[in-house]
Structure formats: C-alpha cells, structure tokens
Length: 119
Image (tube, rainbow, N blue to C red):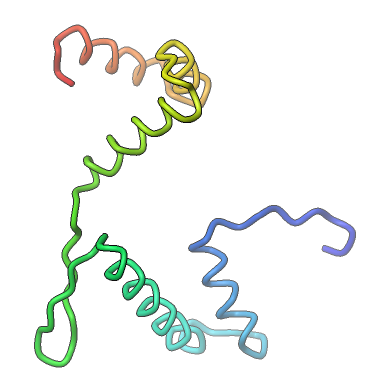
C-alpha cells in the first residue's frame, strides 16, 4: 500500500488493528483475543466512569447495564445534530437525511409516521 492514501479507520476497527499490530504476523484470533479483552475492560471502565454504564459485581466478574436506551441516545444525538450542525433548520436536517442515503421507502415511512403523529 505504499504511496496510497489510507483512509481513517472507525474506532472499533482501529482497536482490532492495534491488537494485530502488537503481535508478530501472521496473527490468529487466539493471538489477539487477550489483547482485545484488556482494551474492552478499559473501555467498559471509561463508560462506567462517565455514567454511561452502571456496573455491578456478580461473582468474580461484573455485569453492565446501560444508563439510557439506544432510542434515548439516538434522540439526543439527532437533537444535537439539528441544533449544532443544522442550526435548528429542520429543512436542512431533512435534506441531510434524504441526501445521506435514506431510501424512497424510508422517506415514505418517515412521512407516514409524521402524518400519523407516530413520532
């Protein structure tokens, strides 16, 4: 890949690559699982410290419960997107949704939900 531009990896994929780079190639899944486990524990600890997860001790391990639902998170981020990036412009927000890859069927479903007050 020398000379080629390498695109930015999403954080989760970068975590896997970090584990692979820490090993001598070729790398098996068994080689990287212990490395990813420690990173996973670090991420779970950070999410718990931020209050995103609640941790409880169960036996020798911990169990985690989200502090909010996926729907609550999506609603919050949608609201943030609307206010920060679209400056409250609903038309710009709708255009971004449509140009962002919503299919005609998804747009029609959104229209139907809005008309039925299903949102």
